[in-house]
Structures are given as structure tokens and as C-alpha cells.
Length: 184
Image 1: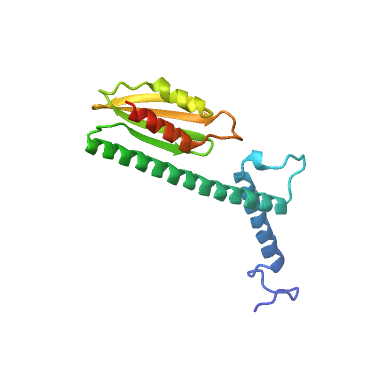
Image 2: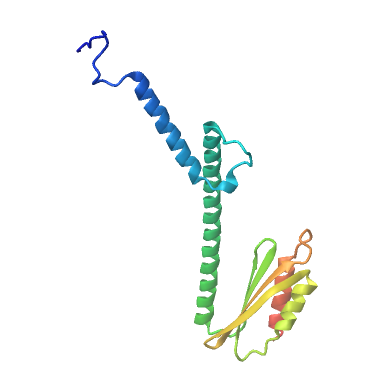
């Protein structure tokens, strides 16, 4: 080691204070960059700038929130995919059968119900009767649609319980709808 005139070490080797100061500045810059990535609506309303510890806590909470949201969206996607697979398999079954009688599929979606009814063009089907059954059982039809594909008519109805705390007995609705279909 070379000694300088004051008896200290050479200027070529950085001193510990400068290294520590650079490390602290780097950490401060990284914390600021991290805080800038968090949406402003996730910050607590305060006029003073949050400490680095607060910024790190907010970032950790935001990351946790994002992970939970990702998991929720994955579950919703899986449910939607299963629903689509069930619908496509039902359509395949009806296509292979030739649709001699109407096909009914009722899905309980918690606070709402989805009905898919497939009939032939030659069936004189009264949709208002189906809506009447829903209403008599305590559900309100919020949307209804149909489409014609080949020799089939696909009816889709979405209903919600009029009183959410009471709900709708889907087994009873399904039973009454099957009785209605058998009468045609």
C-alpha cells in the first residue's frame, strides 16, 4: 500500500463513507422509482411525503392486491371456459341427436340464473310462458335473446332473484320448465 503525505491510504481506493453514501443514494432512488410505479389512488391521502418504509409497505400491499386480483381473474376465466365448454358440448349433442325434442340447460350462477333452450324450427314455442315461470318463482328476466342456426333456435335468458336474500329455487324452476317443454 502506498501512503500519501498525510499518512493516509492512496486516493485510488474509495473510502467507506463514499461507498456507503453511494449505496444509500442508490437505495433512495430505487425506492422512489418503486413508489412511482404504484398508482396514486393507492396512496393514503396525506400532505406530507411518505417515508421510505411507508413507500415500501404500500408497494408490498399493492403487490399483494395485484396477486389476489390475478388469482380471482384466473378463477373467473376458468369458470367461463368451463361454461363455454359445457355450452359447446350441449350444442354438439343437439346437433348429433337431430333435435327431436327441445334441450334445456339451466345454470345457477349464484345471484342469477342462465337458461339455454334449444328447440327446432317446427316447434311452436311460446317464450312468454318461460318468462312467466321465472317470474312466478321469484326471478326477474333481465335479458333474453335467440338466434337461429341451421334448423335450431337457441334461446338464452338471464334472470336475477327479485329478492336477493330469498333467492330462487332453481330446481323448482327447472322442473316447471321441463313440464312446459313436455307439453309441446
